[in-house]
Image (cartoon, rainbow, N blue to C red; front, side, top):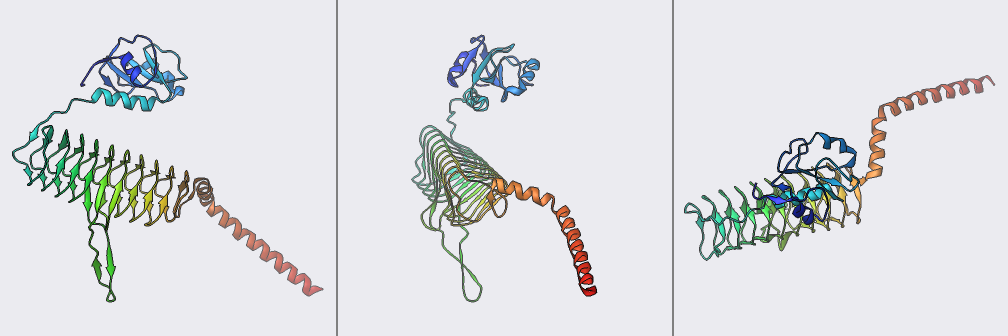
Length: 351
């Protein structure tokens, strides 16, 4: 690991309460059952406290409900978050400026700072502006007039189309395509599909992460915009002129159709599909495989296709599970009603 630090420094980092020896040196973070000398681990829930007895961890991050253990502990409100902060801190290494590899291509009038790492077989177009401490791996293609901010990582085989803007501290994982043409066609009277020129760009703000093989299409006009702090998983499709608000979470295989917008802190579960030209307000949570066809209010929790409030969806699913029995019961009741009707008809004829 990159560094070794005293446990008390890590407690200060996460604003936790240290119980035990603060001089213990930590250089790694590992799972509770695998952690050994020099490694810190975490316990997410107090109900699992018995697992501490079998751990060889040098220290453990625990919930506030746990007051003591056989090893030093850091008591925090959110062990999972604290573990993420500590792990990032332990792994963070100074930027290594490898420079521009001789087997890469850098276009005319491109601004290349002194702190840069451009791997072999990367292709960078004309008039590109690169920030300090940018990493561009092999196979990356950067189009003309692109801007990339400080401390951004563009990993292997990523394509960033002409004119797109990438902020600072962005990570784009292998195979992602930023700025391909939006899916826009006009159909003439003969049924032929005429392509609409896609002349806009993609803008990705600071602290965004884009997963492998995700595609974000350029706008027809204007901007397809991914705002700061948003994290997008692998294999996501974001169509032209979509706006994704700050700090959203978009899980794998989500599809967002054109001109749809998301507010802040929206969560989209895996394989959710959003129709075009709708808006999800702040804090909306969408379950996996949901199909969203209309606007959603602030804080809505929705599921199903077509999407509905989660509580209603749970009742619908429960009812679907009983559907065969309900149908059988209805058939039985229809037979009984028919028999009663026949008996009444016979009785009336006798009268």
